[in-house]
Amino acid sequence: MTWIEAVVHARTLATPDIAVLDLARVDGTEFPSYTAGSHVDVHLGSGLVRQYSLCGPPGPGPYRLAVLNVANSRGGSRAMHALALGDRVRISVPRNHFPLVDARSHVLIAGGIGIAPLLAMLTHLEQTGTDYVLHYSTRTRSRAAFLDDLTANPRVRFHFDDEDPQLLLDVTRDLGDPRPDTAVYVCGPDGFMDYVVGKAEGLGWPRTALHTERFGTDLTAATASGEAGFTVRLASTGAEYLVADDQSVLDVLLDNGVDAPYSCQQGICGECVVRVLAGDPDHRDDVLTDAEHADGLFTTCSSRSHTPVLEVDL
Ligand code: FES
Image 1 (cartoon, rainbow, N blue to C red):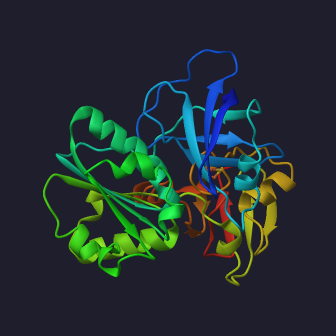
Image 2 (tube, helix red, strand yellow):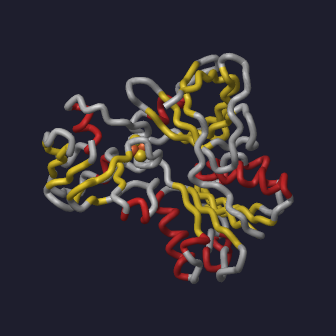
């Protein structure tokens, strides 16, 4: 992966636990331009790589990131919050797995920090005069980032858990029945997204109209469900390695000196994808499509195996 040297040139707190960081290129040149919904990988040292959506106006930058300080963080958000003005970080070029699609109307539904990519989308839709509405749900008003900017926007509907119960997000009322030429985008914590998408599907919205982005798949939680370990076999050498409950295939490959590619280690970037040649994969990524799974592609960082042995094309 090509990394870009960046420097923190502005840092503010959007809420007590959300830091907004503006990054500029160390050499003073412009960053590559990006589209709404893009994210960058941020290299935080010691192999720690995390993904953050770009929430500023789409274009060549500066790149703006909004980072929630997660209480049970595995280090990423803590390291990001520790960044001060002038600190340097390496970032990837932006990638977009969550783009705006061609549609006459767009419904954006944000839960908490999920506002970040949707804010860039909102900016683009405003700039292009495209019809949209943003539903923004947070636990309290004080935990809603960018509140001042959004309050003046008549297309934004706020839903605060601790205020008027009539104004809580109600997918049946706020999204309503499926409409032609309308795209829905959902971003937020897993539970929030499962709730919104489940309700939308129950209302009859086709999966093709629902666009989601999940960040921060917790590999620890995914492997703590008590399933047995399995063996990964390398097709090139026949070498076999045991993948224990608390390890990923990627961990085991790297521990054994295998030159396996990777970046996010969270099943969202696609850098670690290999082809499975034998066995029945248990796909747990958020980057590959069903067709790619069916084609044998597999993320070593997050996915596991239903069969005792999984042979991969390495
Ligand atoms: S390293 Fe990013 S999906 Fe596996």
